[in-house]
Amino acid sequence: MLYDAVMPSAFITGLSGPAILAEERVFLRETDPWGLILFARNVQNPQQVAEFVKEFRLIVGRADAPVLIDQEGGRVQRLGPPHWPKYPSGGAYGALFAIDRSDGLAMSRLGSRLIGIDLAALGVTVDALPVADLPIPGADSVIGDRAYGDTPETVTALAGAAAEGLMEAGVLPVLKHIPGHGRATADSHKALPVVETDRQTLERTDFVPFRALAYLPMAMTAHVVFTAFDPELPATTSRIMIDRVIRGFIGFDGLLMSDDVSMEALTGTLGERTAAALAAGCDVALHCNGRMDEMRQVADNAPELRGRPHERAERALATRRRPEPFDVAQARAVFAQQMARVATRAISA
Image 1 (cartoon, one colour):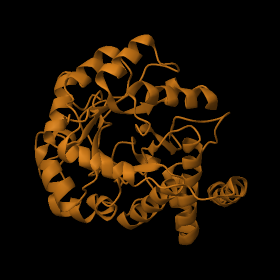
Image 2 (spheres, rainbow, N blue to C red):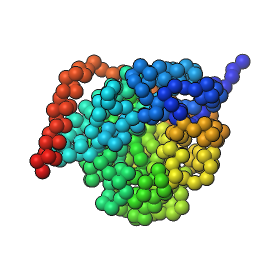
Image 3 (tube, rainbow, N blue to C red):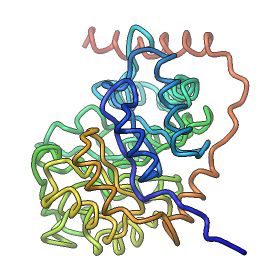
Image 4 (spheres, helix red, strand yellow):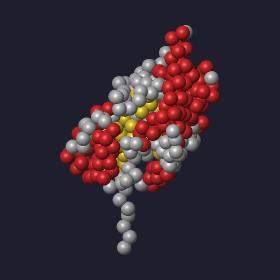
């Protein structure tokens, strides 16, 4: 007799601290989230993180269960000194790119490859990088120097190099925040940003890097309203935005995850937010803060990952590469020397 395979649920969860609590073990076994995302609260040292990641996979019973982290460098870096290096922001690569295009591209790729090596050693398989947002003067600083530059061409080139560096280390990149957060005048962690720019302008500016990088395996949505397409709903919960813009004009056909559904840009209960994101066309919902009451609401509204979402998830995971031999010590020395050029130029300016 044939039985349907048991599928994971269509959400990614956070956990509360550096050890998986008994209540969390029960939750993970019962709900089987597709993946886990790590934050600084989950991190103490390399051995602890590696054991944490291993335990998560043992509990859900999937050796390839994705484990994600936001490790961009700069302001967004969950792993840091003394156990891990501090990496520059995306804007630092943009500054080097302005000095020497080839060096900027090489260092964006190398920096991400070094990040990927750090992550792979812990069993972390997905990094929420690169940031392909195009910052606009007057926008909220939530993106700021996280962006690689202020032109579509610069952002596309450096974000693509960063994604390649991660993949060379055996870590999957996540393109964010599709279709663009750089024009938002509010921080979506705190409020709902509304962009009133016309469609033609968006298509020749903000959407350009995402369209060029639509081949990447995963992307994260922006909690941003684009009134030219949908005057009410943010991209995360807008079927119009996902169908017409993300899947349509941009042409992204990889795994689409929501940004964190606990962010204040979204309204309703956590269950309602989760259901709305999945109904709009997100393949999986992301919930980050590790609060059990919220986690249960998300899980209760996340069905099994089946059909096209499951196909996209499997296809994304299948793009992971086996890392090639690499002289890490030499690479770190080269990276430090090259990035020092940016700091030296900034001081002398």
